[in-house]
Image 1 (tube, rainbow, N blue to C red):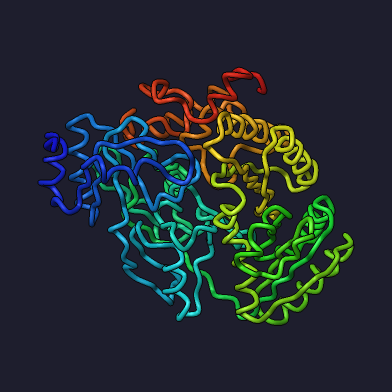
Image 2: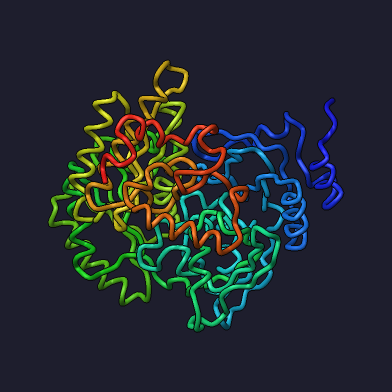
Length: 484
C-alpha cells in the first residue's frame, strides 16, 4: 500500500486519522456531487469545529494544496468538485444545532446541520425555517448558504439570503471572522450578503445565525390539473399579477407525472399535461380569502379539475410528488442532466415551448418540475450515458436551453449556482468589467487560485487542463461572445 504523503500525514496529526480520508478506494465517493462532472481529491478532511478548520487551512496553504469546501454533496453545479485535486473540507461532522432562541426567533447552527432537521427542531416552538430545497432531507445549511438555496416555499418568504443574520467565516488565509449581527439593521457593508451565494469561493462557514419564522396556523394546498402546459403557465402569471403571493406555486409536467405517480401514488392524473401545486398559508381568515382568490384565478384558464387539500397527510402526499420527482425519474432513464435557468414569469409559456422543441430535436425525453412562481425552470434531460454520444447530445441541448433563458431576459441559474458546470456561460450575462469587480471582491476575502479553484469564473490557472466544465462544449461551438 502506498504510504500517505507528507501533506496527509500533517492533516492526520492535526485532527486524527479517523477524520482524514486519503486511500484511493475511499476517495471515490467524493469525486462527484449531483452533476455528471468528476474531480478526485488527494484527501478529505472532516473538521469538528472552527479551530480544526483554521489548522487544516493553514496546513494546506503551507503545502500550496488546493482547498474545496463541501457540504452534503447534493449540489447541482459541480461546486463541490476537487477540479485540481488537493483537499476537500467535508463539513458533515459539524452538525449541531447550538441554540434555538424562541423569543428572538433565531437558530444558531453549525454548517453540517441538515435543512429538514432544523425545521423539525423548530416546529415544537411554533417556528419554521423557510428555505426548503427539494433535497432538504439531505442538504445542509452550510451548502444552502453557499448556493443561496431556495425551495418551493420561498416564494413568499425569500431564499436563504433573506434568512441569514450572522456567520462565522474562516477566510482562505486561515483567519476567523464573525460577520453580520443578530439585529437586522446594522450599519456598514452587507458582508453576509457577499458570502451567501458566493458558492464557497470566499471562505468556509463554520457557524450561522439564521432567522426563523412563525409556523402557519392554517394551510390550504390546491392541485390544479391542466390539459395544456401553456394554460398552466398563463395561470401562474395571473396568480402572481393578482397581488396574492402564495407560499408556494409549483408546476409538474406530464413526463414527471408519469415517473412519480407509479412510485409515490400522489393522485396526479397520468393523462394531464401539467399540474400546479399552489399553497397559501397564514391565519385561517387569510387562508380562506386568499385561497378563494387563487382558486378563482386558476379556473379562468380552464383546468380540468381543481382539488383542495387541508388535511396534513393529503398535503404531504401531494408535496411528496414534487419533492420526490427527481428520484422517480430513474425509472424512465438511468441518467439525468438537471438544468437551472430563471426567466421572467410572463415568458414561461414561450420558454417552455422552446425547451420541449429543443429536447425533441435532440431526441431526448425532458421532464419539467419547477418553481413556477419564481420563473425558476428546472428542465431535466433524461439519457443513458452508456449510449455512444448521448452525454454530448445532452450537454449541447442543455447549452441551447440556457441560451433561451438568457435571451428571454433571464439568467443561467436561479438557485443551483454557476459552480464548475456553467462558469463559461458567465460572459453571456456579465461584461469583463463586471467579472473583474466580482473577482476583486473574492480577492478581498483573501482567496487565491488555490481556494475552490475553477468555480464561477471562466478563467483560472490549471482549470483549462481540467476540462472547463460542460459549458465549454457550447462555447466551443458558438464562441464566448456569440450571444452578448
